[in-house]
Image (cartoon, rainbow, N blue to C red):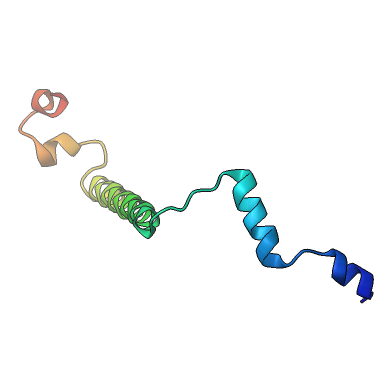
Length: 82
């Protein structure tokens, strides 16, 4: 490298501090990131549970006369629709 380019560059520390001041960056607690991560995992678990319920219902319908679901789960068609 050329010695002139090394001398003209600011140190990394000064560059970072300048960017932080220009961008009005404020620190966040690690709890913010922890809560965000927990929300993502909770959404994932809920979606997996809903998906597994959908698959279970689909398997149940296929094994129990497909369109006669109300016969397996209710006394008559009226209570099935309500």
